[in-house]
Structures are given as structure tokens and as C-alpha cells.
Length: 235
Image (cartoon, rainbow, N blue to C red; front, side):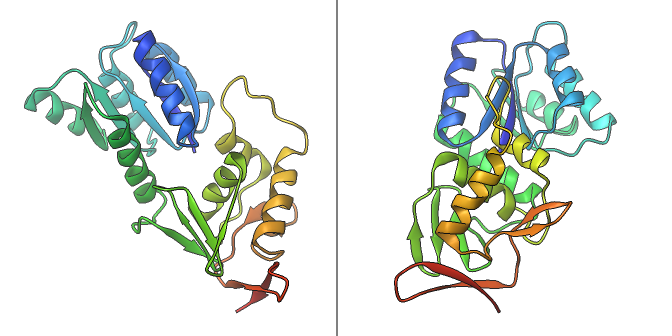
């Protein structure tokens, strides 16, 4: 999923960007509050990791402005402000979670997974649809009880579709999920990954809604042929 990281410390920001990318997130990193507000107005993010002590505009101001615009994306505050009153102010300003520095990267990514699950209406830790299961904590994917190996981008695309099974996402929306600033995007990149996923999961595992986009259906159970190749069959 595409994450906005707002952190003014260069060393910490670089480490977080690397760690979040290793967890298969596309990450845009900004270092001050004004740049954060600009990014939030112009880009579509799945979540925000937000420091509070920022140059140019404090993180709480950024958060209050975001909520005043009726933006509902999850916000995880990441800060050295560790008093109870600080946590109360952050949560009352609209934060969904609050993590105090120093922290463990594993805990940060686990909290992000929980926020993304709730935002996508998926309370269960393992996503399931169309005979496919996807575990965000381990990045394990199975189809018809058979483990499936996916590349990082194939996994990220499938994850985005399985967050809301039955809902079509356009190519532009999928590109927003897959790529951060500066990433090179080919003209048919999404179509290529869709093709790879269908080859691995079955032709009906991802439906094309002409003129709209792509969706993982709720009512398809991929079967396995005698040769071991999955084929989608309507349930």
C-alpha cells in the first residue's frame, strides 16, 4: 500500500523508508508539515506515518487540517512526545494510533497492518476471497490450498484488490498503490502484473470490468487442474 511518511530526522526517515519498502509498501517521504499537507492534497495514500515536531508546521496542525477536510485515511503518530497528555492530544486531534520513539520497526509495521485492515473493512488478519488467502503479516499467499510465490509488485497489486473484494480499482488507482514518487511506471505495467497473477492464480481470480478496472470477485473458487495449473470456476 502507498504510505506517506512525514519525518524530519534524515537518518530515521531513511531507515523507515527502507523498512516500509521491505514490507512491500510504496513510500513517499517528506520532511516538514507544509510539504505533508501538499502531498495529502495532491496524492492518494492508504495511510500516514506522522511525526509531530516538524519544521514549518507542527504535526498536530497537519492532522487537524486533514480531518477538517473530512479525510478519513488512517494516521499513525510517531513521536518523541511521550506524556499521557501528548497522547491524548494526538488521539483527540484525529490520530488512529500513537507510537513513541524509540520503537521497534516490527511493531510499527504491525500497527500499520491493523490500521489498514480496519480502514478496508477487513477485521480478520488474513484476507480471503475467490479461493485465495493472503496473510499481510507473513506475505504468504495461497490459492486452493496451494502456496503461490509472487513477486513484490504482484503481491502488492493482489493485496490492494483483496482489501475490498468485489470492488473494481482502475489502473490509475492501482498505480497509486504500487508506486511512490520517482518510481518508473511503464504504460502497460499494471496489465502485465494482472496477466502474471491470472497465470498463477487462475484466469477468473481477477475480473476485468471493461472501462472501469479490475476486481477480485467474492464468488469464484479457483480449482486446480490435474497438471497443477489453477483455473477459476464460478461457485
